[in-house]
Image 1 (cartoon, rainbow, N blue to C red):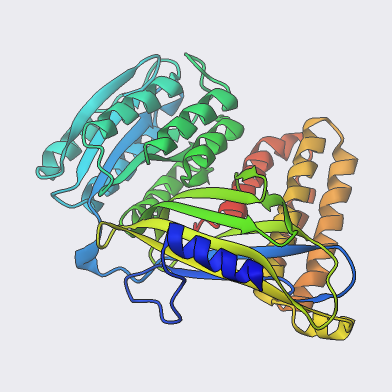
Image 2 (cartoon, rainbow, N blue to C red):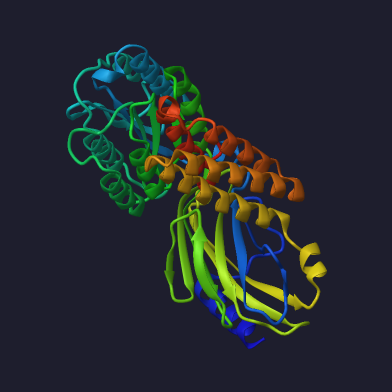
Length: 440
């Protein structure tokens, strides 16, 4: 009880009031829950805590202003249908933004050029004419392109705007910084300024590790467009997200108390310092859910007792009201001698998320094995993963686990050399989608 009182005082003082039982229509919904709200007594064990955040329904007149830079590869490999499709996709972006939104277009080959400086999208026909002048040729200075895009976004950088870079590339970065680590570090630096980078890899020639690192470090989306004709649909999905941002600067803090110890966060980058876990999400979209999944060590506890497991606090900037809002909650578990009661009280939503994230880690390990040339070992791991997912999907009646099972079977069937370039990109894309709860 003393920990509960202590946490209540700390969270109310630092983060504001506890989460209300009725969430207002223009507030994000925060749902924090344990996979096993009832645990077995008298044994040390691992608990999983899922903190879900769902964006509120956004009214059309409340859509936040946008500040976006399109960064388009125009190297020699983009000639023909690829460049035509990239132009069409960029024109879709111009059509989706509103007159008061800011848009810039940056192109790059061996160097980066600003085709359209950051400007309000008032004269859309002029913008489309400039885009249609694009011509392909040269090498791939990807880093310079993103850097130049960031400079254009920086001209109108505003925490009350949705600040975004959308990158399209079909090739390997071969001019300037070109490793996944270097581009990931750049993405992380942009994240600190609340600038998000979405990456779209086109065809089979790009570096999927680099593109996912850049997106992940800035909390953007990532897509694999195998065919040039897919670009238009991905741009529509992306601008659907951009025009539905309801919260930015979303900071989640989870504090373990009363002897509990944070072990790790599954699927997301996080900072763990002692008993405190900190996670940042740059943006949250209308009626979409993102979650943070935490593994916590819980000490042995006597039967018929309640134990406080953690405190959760969420601070975010509401894009509908342009104000900072704070919510907090205390998470507790009850303890019993009955394994049957533990099983009956399992939270299927949380457990499904746990199974998904653990399966994604296995899928990543299989990719690593395949990179090392261990094809048989990779295939076996994927098929074992699929078998486990099938059992869990049946147990929890989960369509998402069933889908992930099918994905692992498809991966296992496409590990041969002639299929690997495409399948590796597909695997990275699906891993990213599940880890980040991406909608498309």
